[in-house]
Structure formats: structure tokens, C-alpha cells
Image (cartoon, rainbow, N blue to C red; front, side, top):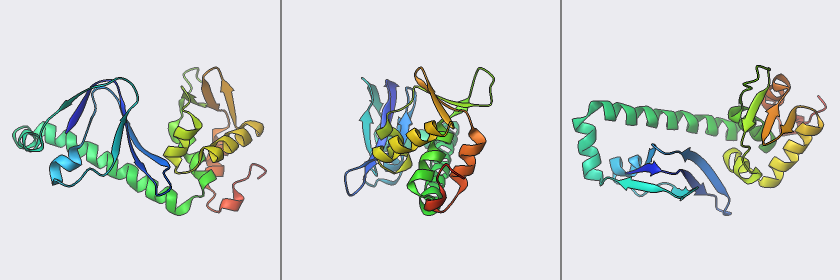
Amino acid sequence: MLFVVEGSVRVVNFSLWGSEILYANIPQGGFFGELAAIDGQARSSSVVATEKCLLATIPPQSFIALLRDYPDVAIEVMRRMARIIRICDDRIMDLSTLGAVQRVYVELIRMGRLDPAGTDALAIFSVPAHKDIASRASTTRETVARVISQLTAASIVERRDKALYIVDTARLKKLASRLEEGRGDMAR
């Protein structure tokens, strides 16, 4: 069990073809490794530092004792595991029902936050690199670049400074909800 005392890390796995699949970003104050500490199995993913980090570790036996002795800690770990399960359920649904283009649409919507300027737009501040969005959407960097270019040409998204604004959220949500790959074009 490891705690991120300073810095941040990414929890990733790799496809058979070597593509990185992002599971989570863990900021300072977060933790990882609880699954392996609880069940004693091998780790199911890799963790990569995104900046200089200071990590603290607890051996599995001590972590289990901590959970037994401090129910509030156990509840917090269970809440985190429940969030992970819900995120996995969403990803399984996306992979089962959406094409690559629609998964990029959905990921952009998930990343967006209400514009603090009070508009109806969603804003993605500090826009991740295309490869990072691709990793989250289980697709390729090229697909993400093409989708963002098409969305920009269709006036659905706009780049401003270091942010990406989804200016026509309703239209993007409509595109994202189309299940057939061939119907994801901007013309409709």
C-alpha cells in the first residue's frame, strides 16, 4: 500500500499492442495498492510518476490491521473501491456500446467543468495531450486529433488560451449518444 505524500502518479495498464490505458490520476494525498494489499494477489496495473514524488508505504499486514482497528479508514477505502467499480462499469458500458469517436466525445464531456464565467459552456482547463485523452477513451492519438479538429470545424468546441471549451454541449451530448459508429458525423 502506497501513499502519495508529494507529487502525483498515473495508474495505467498496457494493451497487447503496447497502447497505454489510463485508469486514474492520483494526486498528492491519494493512495494506491490497496487491492494487492487486501487480497495478496499481484498488482493489476502499473503506476507512473507524472512529476517528482515522495511516496510512503505500509506493508500489507499493517494495512489490514489499520482497517480492522480504524473503521473510518476502512469505510474510506471501501468508498474509494466503490468509485473504482462505478468508473469501471461506465468504461465497460462505453467500450461495449460506443465506437472510438463517441468514446472521445464522452471523455471530453466527462473532463469538462462548468465555465466559471457563467456561460453554458463546459471548459477543460490544462487540456491533456491527445495521447492522454486517447488513453482515457481507449483509442488512438490520431482519432482524438481528428475528432477535436472536426468538433472545432463544426463550432462545437473552441480552443482559448490553454483551455478547450465545449460551446455546444447539447450537440456534443447528442453526438455522443449515437450508438452506431457511422452515425457520429457532425452533419446530423
